[in-house]
Amino acid sequence: MTIYQTLKNDHDTVQELMQRLKKGQGAESDQRSFETLKMEILLHAKAEEKVFYTALRQHREAQEMVQHATREHKQVEEMLEEMSELEPQSEQFLSRLEELRSSIEDHVEEEEGEIFDAARKLLSEDEARRMDEEFQQEKRRLMSEMGQGAGAEDEGRIGARH
Image (cartoon, rainbow, N blue to C red; front, side):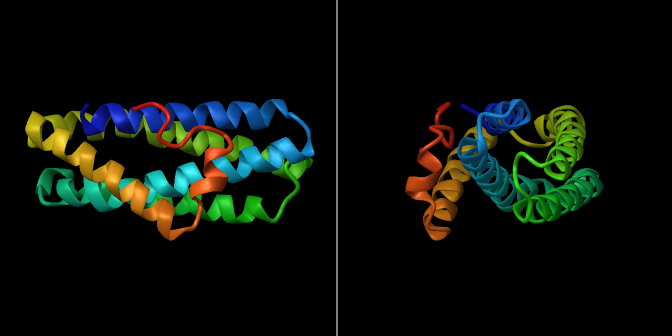
């Protein structure tokens, strides 16, 4: 598998988790879904920045796109922190969830379009496969570092699509 498919799989997982939260499954379940969503996004963003974006930064024609995407990651992280202080079934939380969904959809559209297109021109297929392995390893390392191995497995999402 290449980095592109793995990143797309992560994007799909985040979308599913946001849908689950929007529907509401009860306070306890919604809290678990939010924690899983937050962990998925943070692991994805940190590993993506370290592996995928670092490789693209080596190419002048991708630098601006990568800077923009990195700023979007930071904005999403800030939204997640704000949402962490709210009850998942509150109106304020649901409003922030809609803002988060919109931000993430815009980011994913740009990434899966412009950034992936540029990366496919700049990186070989072998590099994309190696990068996928590095990305997976980085996510596992981060998960271990964050002490989230068991908690994230509850939702059965992280790494489930390999």
